[in-house]
Amino acid sequence: MPELSKAEAVERLVKGVEKATPDYLAEFYSELFPQKTPPSTLVVGDIIKHIKNGLEEEEIVDLWNVVFPDDWNVWYNEEDKTFRYNQEVLGYVD
Image (tube, rainbow, N blue to C red; front, side, top):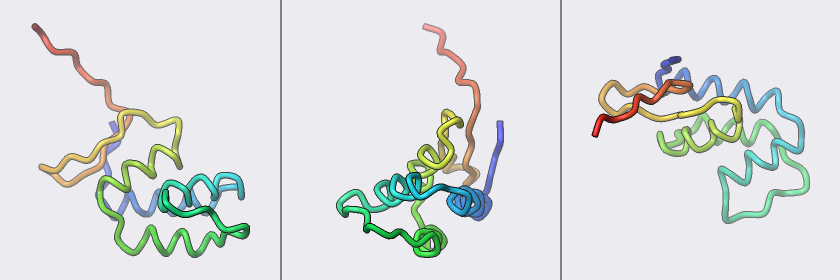
């Protein structure tokens, strides 16, 4: 189960966005700005600047699911202020 600080999670998102194709950039833009239509020309630097300028924890989790679709069970642990993902969820005993 990977565990990342907010700064580490933001850095991983930035690296994922830097490697993205233009089609994926439109998806990232739509996740960050759901009320806006993506411009015809997306600038990677603008998306990265927005990510680095202080996304809320919930926004990081939502964007993580788009940037890294193979990761699962992504969540933010408020107690230790870390992001976790790919962690098995244990069932509850009735």
